[in-house]
Length: 168
View 1 (tube, rainbow, N blue to C red):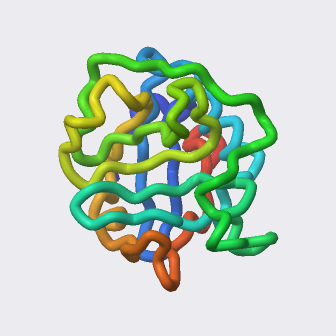
View 2 (cartoon, one colour):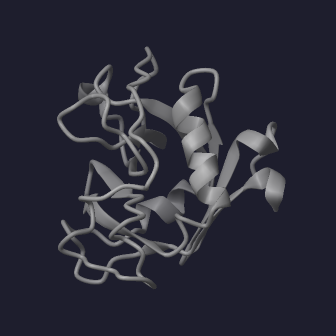
C-alpha cells in the first residue's frame, strides 16, 4: 500500500479490480480538493459510471446527477450533469497533466467545474493551464488502466465507493 501521508486529503476509490488511492492537492487547488471530499463524504460518487473513457487519453467520471448506476442512471445524459453545489472557479497551476493526475472536467467555461473529473492515462500536456489539476494517483493506477473504454462504454465501469481515507 502506498504510504498515506495526509489521510484527510487522500481519496480511496473502490473499482471492480481494486482500490485506487488519490492524493489530493489542497495547497494547489483548495476548492476542488474540498469539493471532492464533500461529495465523497455525502456518498454522491458511489456507483457513478465512467461515462467517457478514451484509450491513450483519460477516464472521466463524477456526474453525480445522471451517472449513478443505482439511481436514475441514464447513459445518454451521463456526462452532462453535476452536483447541486455551485460551480467552482478554475484553479489553474503550473502542475502538468501527467499520467495519473486528476483533472477537473468542465464545459467551455473555465469556471464551470462541479463534480466531474478525469484521470489521465498518459502525459497529456496539451491540457496544461486549461484544466485544474487537483490530485494524483499514488496507488492502483493499474486498476484505472483496466477501466472499460468507450464514449460511452457499452457496459461502463463504476466507482463502487469513494471515501476520504481519514474516515475509513
